[in-house]
Image (cartoon, rainbow, N blue to C red):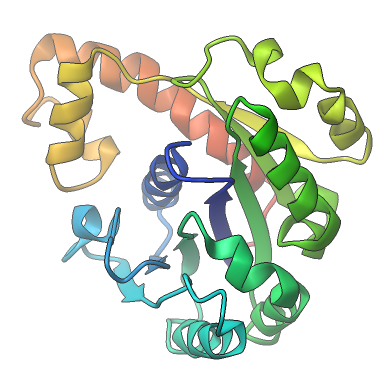
Amino acid sequence: MSIYYNGGNKGGTGKSMVAAVLADHRLACGRQIAIVEGDIGQPDIALRFKGMPGVHLRATNLNRSGASEEAVIKFAEALADLPADADIVVNLPSAAADTMDALASMLVDAGRDLGHESYVYFALGHQQTATDSALQSLREGLMAAVPPDHRCLIYPLFLQPDITRFHFVRSGARDAYIETGGLEGAMPALRPESLVDKVLSLPGTFTALAQPDSALSFGERLFFGRQWLPAAHAAVAVLTEGASHE
């Protein structure tokens, strides 16, 4: 089984969308999943999947920079309380690095004790602050705690449609990251805004929204189901295709 951590350098990089797409992808692959929300005051994706068969929901506060040990203890207990045969999708809050980075290796070891391999997605902003945060995670945070082929940088194309214009790429950091074996994916932009609002307001899986009986119109389904969703699934499948689910 696998634990998928979904984070980023700050809010607004689409990390919750990555987590939601990942949960959708695992369900579409026939997996049982658990979703752990790391911000109990803002359960970004739990409401979408609430009450669905094969989905287990938990919430624990990971915005605890002054009480990291207590936060990690409670998080580990939440993991231990989940079904052993479920893939776990962890939706990290924007300040999770302040809480978790110093204890990242222990978290990965704890997951392994429970029979789970850990994988990390990092939704990357397009400015230098995002590069700095990603490099910090690669040096001493969650990404440093897993092997290179267990980490994936996600470029959110709604921020910048040209990957070569992300500071991480322009600075040369991407070249070094790829040389070490790190993986990457591009999360497609969902447009127009009216479709974004409609999709986010509707509960249930993205896969279900692409079906003929969904609340989306024919034209909306055409773009959403045939263009955006396959590309979004492909972005997260970069890690899941190599994950062990025994």
